[in-house]
Length: 242
Length: 252
Image (cartoon, rainbow over all chains, first blue to last red; front, top):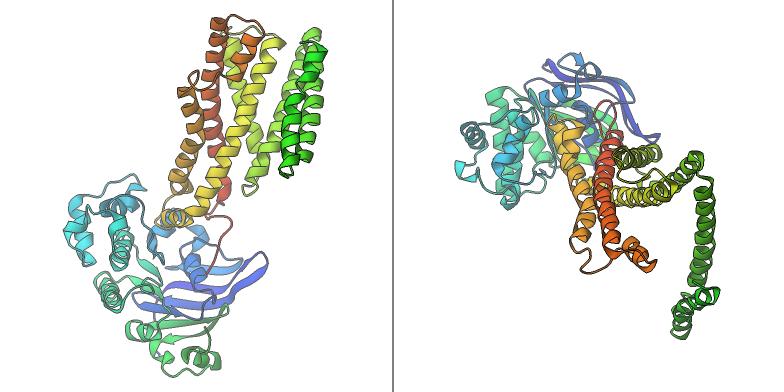
């Protein structure tokens, strides 16, 4: 197996809510510059893993290193700009597409020029005519694209994507998949992508984490999903675990 | 008012009791409790006020105000249980509003520094501050619940907690103060304010009654806006921890 430089490394990470264990202990790495998919049944703790990566949550114990630095040593807003996240349902703030794209910079009291906004839009495959459209008028696929573009504005080194294609039709899903692959190749961004779709995990992921009931059951190159060795992973792949 | 006249006012209690009985509304018990409580509480307050006015001592005035604030905080804090430390936040809010308004009234000599003025005006300020706190907390907690996604979005893009709650906070402040501002627009057209009506009934010159009512209206504008804003800015930080994470997380 090829060895990769880790973008994010988990070391004995545990997380619980009100004393109820949700995750861990987990030890593993997300390789830098690669697309890692995070798969597993509902309630496995996938979203929790993403939120731990960008500091929306903190572990009860263990250590999380982002590009070699412990997350607690990083200022939360700086960490979240470095590790961007596209949320599952692509929430939009009220206003236009431009208002949404400008949001990450406005949070830093900076402005986004219209020309830059257009170039981010084109980057995700939307034409400039969308710039002044109301965010509420976008289709599901367009919202996800704007959400991804908005995350790109922070020029994050690592992008977290929480089931961004689960509500989309096949055509839009394909578009988002090729968009994410393109971002990965163009900017060398490390990508961690939660998906329910195993076919998608195999086709676009270089690497995969299989989480089941808060446990990291298997990690490795995506092809491990084609012929899993672990019994639970085998059952999950067959669709016996939901 | 003569004792007979006062007793005759109970007719206004008998009418709802009779109707409730006849139509099986089941309001009798609550009506009787409300009547008995209001008689006891108001007479008690009346005698206490008489004692405080006669004694002319600032200690009793302060005790009266402290009692009002205690009751108001107790009542309002029931609405904000989701916010840690809500009791002291409401206490600080109400005390600050009371100190600010009395400071202006007494400092500029707008009203005389006697129990007769300080206590009723404090009652109105504390009471309104309490109502505003309840309105604000209701709205703010429901805004926060409804816009969790938005809060999380701003945090995830590198925003601070203040930025993440900004629109929910301003919406809740606006929503809780709008009724006060709106009711002032129709004041005198739709309803005569209680205090003014009372003064007129008690024989005061209507124009003078109006002057005092205006004082109270303007005072309540400050009370409303300052209560909401202060409680808002005291409340939102306790929804986040020092790592700028939302407390009360939900997970997949």
